Length: 67
Length: 255
Image (tube, rainbow over all chains, first blue to last red; front, top):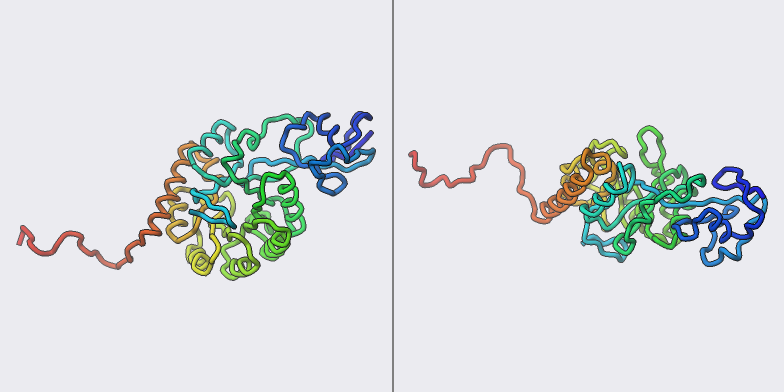
């Protein structure tokens, strides 16, 4: 399926069903990352309950150096 | 002690984390600075290199308070969105409101900064707005209930130091919340000067990260902030137009 990830159209495997799967796919499950799914901030405790579907808009956000 | 909201800090130096030559240099600079509050920016991950190292993840987060900024926002709504994303990390409740209104000077948009601060206070954030050195705007922000005022010394990254000490002094005198001089600091003398004016703290980034030796400069800034604060507390002498001898006038050997 295709999702819009950080502004880019990205093809991801069909077996990704929820936010938790998506993070694991990118090996980010133990990283400091904030997920926004279709303009809503995803609750960390509910990643396995938040389904990912074709056409979803996902933002993966983190902290970088800044002043 | 510096008190922001209900939190106490030993260090009055707040350090930015941008543009260091390497993580190793940065870690050492942060260590010697003895800063307890570090600023960060909120950005999209590079999804082509999601596993690349990240400075924040190398820090002992029990030792530091994170102060994410809303840099990149041009409106109050954008700033609020960035702040909420930062808070969703579960790592911070403070936010540096930074709404830029001019791409050339990177000066803050006063109207959007005020609006964003109000919205974020309603959301329960500890709000530290980066503002210009406008005295009335600083008062209006304080009236909203912000937890600190962060007036710029001069444009971000310019290293020009304190261009309007009079305004900063007015802001410091009128303010009952901490005043942290943010942006434009170039050298240790600027940091010491800000503290001598009575500022409660100094926030800087490029002055350290862009120095020839960032680690040494981090130490210099730590000492400058401490020296300036001590000088302020000690109370400096009044300036006079002419000399006043330090040695006694009586018992001159030469008369």
